[in-house]
Length: 95
Image (cartoon, rainbow, N blue to C red; front, side, top):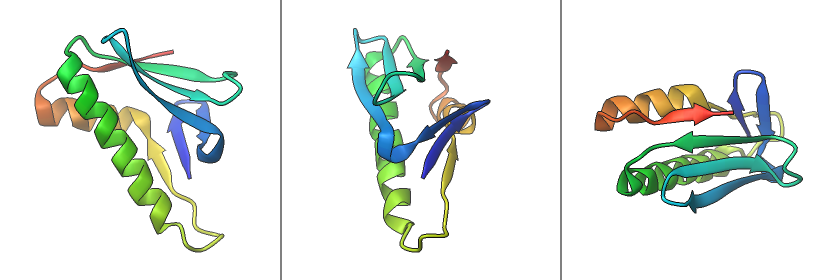
């Protein structure tokens, strides 16, 4: 499974979905921290909801990968846009 954003590709087995940091952003990074993105949102409660939604989606999709040739990709930009629409928010990805 891969999490993608523009030119960034996060191989899931080597990717951390971090907890909320300082109540302001959620971090996605590779284990070696060579790639990282932050999803910034001023509402800490909704940031927690974003975190839970992304982690649950990743877990669900990863569980569906039962064949070695199946690849699952999550476009983080689309995920954030849909989250914003659903909850009328303004989360944004910071590189």
